[in-house]
Length: 178
Image (tube, rainbow, N blue to C red; front, side, top):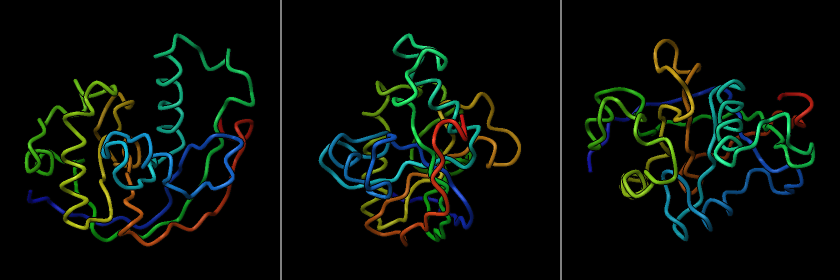
C-alpha cells in the first residue's frame, strides 16, 4: 500500500497508567492492540500532540464507561509523559490526500471513533508498519475539529521497531496536568 509520508520533530505527550514502571514500552499495545495494530503484532507508543487532546482522550474513554472525570479515584487517573521525538517517515493520515491514499474517507475519523472501527484501521497500520514507516500521524478521534494547526487535534502512533526512541522530558501526575 502506498503512503504519503511526512516528518515530525518536537514534543508529544503520552498517557500511561500511574503505576507504570516502563513508561516508554509498547508491550501493552503489542499484547492488546490498538487503533493501528492488532493484538500480538508489534509495539506502538500512542501519543498526542497536545495536553488538550490527551485530556479529551481520557474523558472519552471514561465517558464510554459512563464515568465522569470528577468521579474517578485519583490513583486510577493516568500520568502524562512529555516526550521529545524526531520521526522522519510517518504515514500522513492527517490530510485528505494521505487518507485517500490508504482508502480512508476525507471525513475520517468520523464514524471511526471507537474500538468497533479497529478492523478497518488495523490493516492500514499493518501495511504502514510493513513499509517500515516510523508510525502514523493522524487526526484524533476525540477532537471535535481538524482545522488549524495539527498540534490542536493530532496524534502520532510511533512504531518503536523503526523509529528512534523518544526522549523522556517529564512525567506529570494527574494533579499536574488534568
